[in-house]
Image (cartoon, rainbow, N blue to C red; front, side, top):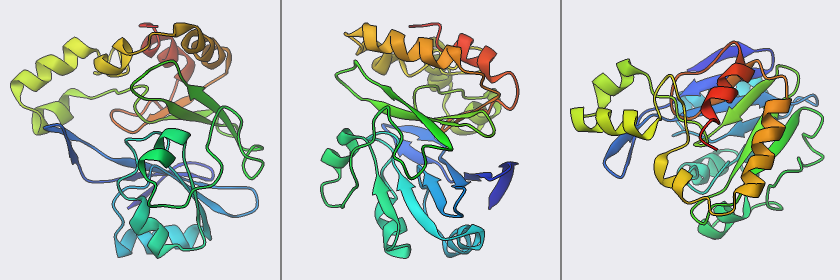
Length: 231
């Protein structure tokens, strides 16, 4: 189930979930930190096969929710890996008050992984915030919903015709890769948003991995120029 991506970074594709009547694919990123610990971003539905493959990479120590939507499978991962620490922004922690999290994530990476990841905190929206992660060794930016990049093959297979039209109108398809329209419209304080855009565009990004859509394996900086154009 685990696919090699770059050294010490793996991709795991999960099944679709229903999000307000739309089929959304799920995707997790697994990283091995310098000390050998395993870091799991946006955990997907856990199976015994997946658990064993992840365990084979090293001890699972960190389970990361990037925003308050990506939390569905945290409980089962924590039950399977009780020594793992739970992480998320304050919005996730507030939503999942049944779980015990570490200090809320923001734009400053915790010391435990600051050598390997730079963080960017997308703020300014009344609807949702998100923490983005830049894997420094591979120059891979990891994004949950701040960029959605659906391909035509997925839409043909999983979305109805009128949903295809909405996807294109919202700009969440290949060629744009924008954040969802409702989230974009909720940014009333854009100064912070522009600061994040400028920081991202100043980085030398090679790959962009998003939770929903076609991964960009080359020319990541050019992709960011495109998908952040709406700001």
